[in-house]
Image 1: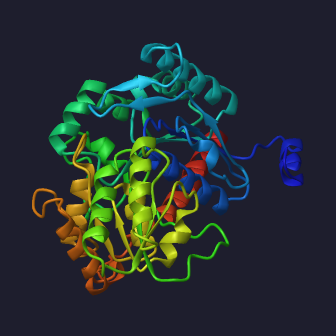
Image 2: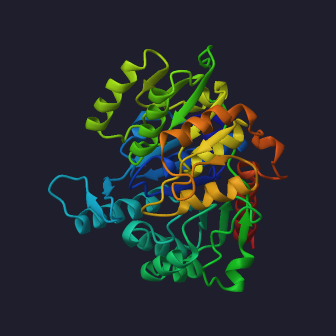
Length: 407
């Protein structure tokens, strides 16, 4: 019990609402950061709600969590370049660690007893690890189950084959009370290739993108700069190399760049980049990991980034002129998002097939940043309403559950 209100509720036989968020986080930061943003908004909107995030992110402990939000760290797995996975747990194979994770998830759900479970992206969880928990919660009938999808998942045909292989479509139809898409249908429909039943389609909610805000009192650097961020950094080597090459080849390129490597950039690659950064004599400044990257976004004159969902939300939220260099393997998700955003006038894209990944293309893009329109000049109604929409849906689900319990 953390407050007199909690204790009073317990004495009265009531229980404060609980929301659990599942985020498999096998690679990168995206799923954890999205779940953290959702949990923060939900608990801020209702001071009685607590939230618990289940995450496999190896850097979860480096983030701060607001009051009434906590996390459980699941044993980690690593995504290889070919899309397969390996266990990070010494002495355990992938099957063993998946079984361990599944047991931990089910045990946590049984003890935490959530009123709402929000599942990020994977209907059955990593390698089906979530199914025992979904079956348990559906059997008890207490929790409302929500599947949350980012705006783009993959090419429609590729996604359909993947969901068929994982039996994800059946799980979505069988278990989930609602499907939330953290975007707008007018931008992109991530389910366009899926044979969702009319009943499931009727349970879909298009929330809008998840707006990001400054969460710390830190001031951004004073001198003009562009922010360069490859997100988690694990697949950002090509983009960072392109930016450094641009500054090396064009001595007059400005303003200076602040480069955030991300926690997953390999040590050997980082050492190589540090040598090149040092030779640029302050025109590029590099930092390893910034948990409050929103501060750097807020002060930037422009952004060069990859095309991940969270970074795209930050570009929109802080209304920054941006150049996106999307990855194209193992998924086309980032390329699809960047292409559609460029069509809508929200960003500029360097397309490796159209523009080539040459320093000249990056030089032109950075020099052209001041002439780009701001995203707000092309923004659509509801584009950044995602967090407000989600908090309203949580309240509606809680109210509906209370009404059912009273009947």
